[in-house]
Image (tube, rainbow over all chains, first blue to last red; front, side, top):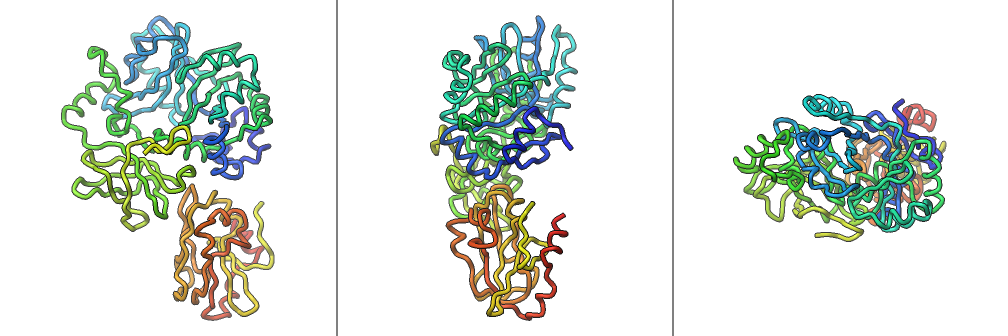
Length: 359
Length: 127
């Protein structure tokens, strides 16, 4: 028996198949993962992401603390509600976790992964020394992601009082209203919202969205959607042994100002100076078979790499994968598919955005 | 609870076997197996006329979640395969005991049928 979110009973009522996910009892699908995936690409789907950990950072040194802690620079967040994707690195430049930071009114909100909660909190707490800040977890909040081309409209229909606020949201911005927090963020490659709400309101809201026609979606569809969108999954595509520079996260490392001494900076600078050996790419297999994580990638003349996440793409109808390969890799490679070296195309991520093929 | 028809035979690796009136057998995967796999996206079938031994891996079913080997339940010869599954792998989820049969076999020894599990035996194996 794992931990249960406030929506656990809703999942059972909707026929959710429950699996263990980082110590939580979560729905993997409600019948067909592929139908759920398609609902998000074509209309709107919703995900219970209440298992994710919200940590608020307050105090006079909150900004200085996060500028030390995170590889991206929260000083880029010029207005209230703006959000930033970033890695939190160790001293060797490995990724402890990836997270979203929102600039709030005089403080910051972070959302970190559930499977990494304990080590994240330990690391964050250990580095508070010398900073006048407080870290507060928000377990009383539930979180629902509503994603897809019709997602914003569906939420506005169910929550008319938030319609104007939702209209005003820019991409990667979140704003509070009466104890709820609406953010135009997601993990699917579609437009949509991630909504943090008091947990006692969660089941009613879920039910209303469901009645409005929003498809409940499980972790299975969440994974195929994020993979098509070329987004990393912590533990698959990067971890503490992997630098953001070889995990497709180079754009999240803020090198300027040069004087900002974030944790991991020295290691990344050394890595850059020595030459970055690997890179993250997308792989496409247009024939039969499905690429899976940990399969070997062979690049003639350049060396070997590894599939870090692979699946069947419901949108494209063939297998796609995220892989770490030698930096010199060109347009083609081979993947060891159950003992058979198979030709694949190498592309620049993502595979799909807003329902459309991107390569 | 998954559906385990009483008129079929089973092996613990989640294939079902139906004895036809002409003495051949039809083989597919069980409702329990398709439920565990999730949405099936590819099925790779054996060659017609190939001779197989019991427990030999002769087919592959790939779902969104995982690849899984399919075993010959008994020794014999493959006499037909269900080519429709190439274009409609989702049938494995929709109708595992009907439209989504995998292959038909001529058994090397009909007495081998006694080695298979009945519905109760298979239900126990799934627990």
